[in-house]
Image 1 (cartoon, chains in turn purple, yellow):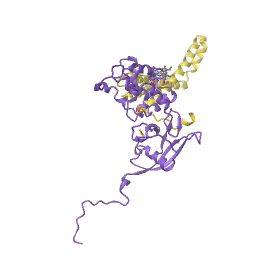
Image 2 (cartoon, chains in turn yellow, orange):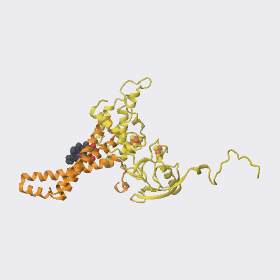
Image 3 (cartoon, chains in turn cyan, orange):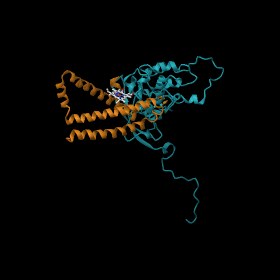
Image 4 (cartoon, chains in turn cyan, red):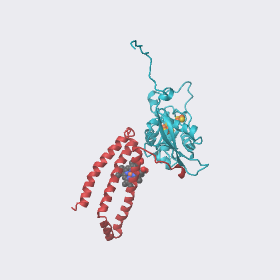
Length: 260
Length: 126
Ligand code: HEM
Ligand code: SF4
Ligand code: FES
């Protein structure tokens, strides 16, 4: 016709079925989980789950999908789902990671994604290990402020420069990704392990704390810092980006010089 | 634990594999020294037996073995210096990867120099 109607300004061509969550691309993955169900089978075994996941999903979402829609017996720990609580450290494609901080799209989805429990701690079921030996070492380094001086009426002051000495090691969420990535810890469960040393470092280099020497003495043990072989697995695994090997090296040097 | 914990091999990076290399070469050097102390001690027991043992070393297979031993010692020595820096130099942990590439670079140069000389002496018939 000769009369043309102006097109409405807001007109957008939508393909049928598009809208809501549909814009997020989906893809298929194979989740290969190391199962361990002592009540029915003596040995651990691999089990594959084929899943359709979204581009925004993490490994934790894939585990949820398995547990909620495929096999409710799959067991794993998680709480916050946002990298804060430290519950869901596991071995993803052979390296320790938090399932809730590992996006599926960052992994090679053309191959099965392997998920296993962390190494070196007694396996209880599927992805759950007994964390007690880990927390035992943590308790032994006395992870709390010890101060012999008078109780201050206000806050305990600290300069920014003094705080900077241990700022990095305050970030630990006790997920055990570091300790269970350590080849020394795998073969020698008595070794304090990176996480305990990181948390000792946090107080040893705190100018408000008076028990640095005691903690250095504890870590000067034969199962202490000298077990460290500097493989850097811990630094690479830490989900908080803590320079773990650096912290251990600083404790080694502090033991030798005792300048704290 | 042994049955249940076996899964995939942990995929460490440069730090872990250089440690594996350091331990393997350390053990290899130790085993060599053990044999070497024994064969050298033989000279005080029976000098002609010592000469006979040493003579068996002069063959191409031993030349290759010696080359491998030197390769192991060189890696262990250079990486050992790197580990000392990692432990005691303030910037050591930050540059551990670059230090490893340095170790590998120096190792390649020194080992190539040795291998060319040693193998041409052993196989060149000079
Ligand atoms: C050439 C001079 C050498 C240097 C600079 C050197 C240096 C080192 C250093 C720094 C370490 C500690 C590694 C760590 O902290 O992880 C070490 C470990 C070791 N070295 Fe040597 N070393 C040398 C020669 C030797 C020799 C001759 C032997 C054999 C008898 C040997 C056998 C070992 C062994 C078995 C280890 C233990 C490896 C481990 O615990 O992972 N090293 N070496
Ligand atoms: S140092 Fe890092 S990897 Fe180790 S327990 Fe703390 S947060 Fe986890
Ligand atoms: S679930 Fe809390 S850190 Fe991952």
